[in-house]
Image: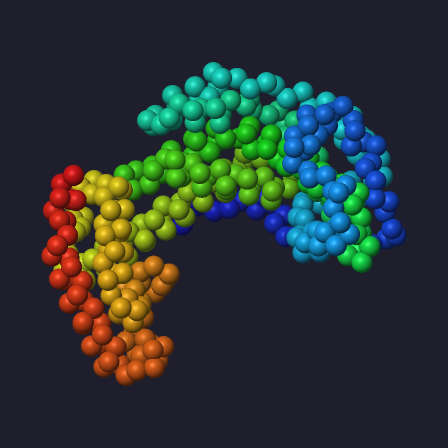
Length: 357
């Protein structure tokens, strides 16, 4: 793998265990949760947090058990142990700049790719200053840490409606801060994934995967390392795009190999764009229909022998014989019968039409 694909050692990716129980913590919202700096985040959280005032005791017990099964991961920091940290963190204003339509339009133009103009809306958030970035990461992880503290106090035998609502709100507030980081870095995703676009890898698919990689990078980034998030995110997104392209190539090669073994000569290394991505989907769809015409054992043998579907490697005749409880020769006969059926069906498929469209 090229050196620039290597993941920079920028993140503490291990799970942070929930704080030890050091005495019962009162299940009530802290005063800093109502500070003006959290007004926007709280408005969004109001739409996400479900009130539990009418929930029965059994429902509260069920929700408590569900919450205890879900880990709350965050990047820890020594400062999180300070009692007054919440008040200090949310006293200083973020001063986020408003979204600008011209930033999204410029991102579309710079991409050099023909894509829907509405995608430009993803890039309307201005870049963050180093101070804003630091504050957002610190606040996000502190909110998650506080949620983990209250999670550690949950008791299914004595469920607390107030504590469950508080945990949900803290997680929703953390998500609001995470989203501000993500939207400010979406132009970075655009600039990286467009370099991997070709006839076989569409921009919108790569963009979708790239955004997921960006979100994962936000959740794993250690804000206390002293360098900008974009340095780390670039490596994560680039490596993810590279992996996506490789996996897509491997899937196409498997499909081509399976069709070639049915005496269907569909590929020509010298004409890369002869069959488009759409045509490949049509071929795979037709192959799937053809396989459905086989009986259960024949279908299983063909998929396993040509590494199709869920099979990630080519299986030997003997391994299939062991799986099916028959002799190796019987597997060979079933494979030959299935291939004959597929060849007969392939004669009715207008492959020439697919190649020339």
